[in-house]
Image (cartoon, rainbow over all chains, first blue to last red; front, side, top):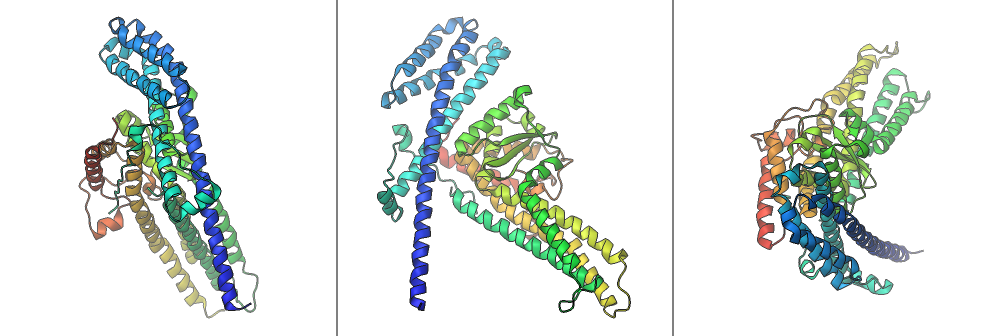
Length: 186
Length: 324
């Protein structure tokens, strides 16, 4: 075999390795995105379960906040009843809104804050809300990375070959936001 | 952030460190063979010390890779959190770790508590699937929720970039080098030498030189490696924390609190100091900069880190990002 043939062979091997690496990165990204999506579902269910307990626990203390509590209950029912899709996102967003209001209002009741059970439930609600927000954030960041790769040369050729497609963001306002670029290196 | 590029870099650094470690240990074995056991490449006898060195180096490298995390955790008396019997603060810690594992896309790490009043934290392990985060009781007591979250996010950054692998291997290998230099001093001074060979004096001298190098120079060089490796990575873990929490000001105020509340940590050592979010041994207030400071610090000056985070905070707010 001549030197030329060896060089060509090595080049072919290098190209194959490169193709496999890009293909694998697509597979990895898709798996990450699916997992993040499942996480969002898990948190939504957890939130549905938490709300009745929380409302029950704070009811006695917050006699004067009937409207807030009712708004939470109604938003929960509506979110649970809405089939998956754009409307569901909106309903879940509305639920997050009224829950945020409930937590803010609860700050005005010192008795409430010193109740152990309420404190535990509030922290559980806070972490569920946070986990939901972070799962969405991770989902959107990952979708952005995937979409960039699907569109960008040369990885777009492999995406086309193996039918890797772009995915949609969770919320329109968040879709418009890219990850803030922060570089703390010198 | 490009975590994959960082992972590749860490893989390279780890392999390089282990190769250098093997070379040092083998060279030592060979010196002992050559000057004490009369080994000669052409005539033999069997190079016992070199073979032994090879075995020791392999075992030690395996231990540092697979069990380095347990060794490091044990050295600071970290105890695993028991979720069933956790108090409010510890439950909050578990919540925050779970939040950050979701934000970073890492699997849930094991969580440990260090019995120390100094607010500090570190992460260890070999990859995101085998990772642990350890925080001190002081951190739990003194941080607000958002600050705790920012510190945990910083550690998640170290896990995602696989810094933990490199840092843990460095910690265990530094310990090994300290032990070896100790043994070598003893051999050089007390071990009986073969009689009737005119290389005797020269052999002892060479061995003493090597022992000296290992005892004095190797720890310093190792320390410098640990420092440079760790210092670069602190800034990028700070940036990762910002990426996960979108809240640079929380990390800035956490670092500020740590800076103003400094109690020495009893169990931390020179071998593990580079792993913490803030150096647990040196009081960092009035951090100096420049050549000597660069040589002696495992971490970038804390004021510089805070200033950068504050600046990032303003940029992010100006861009309309951020979360409360």
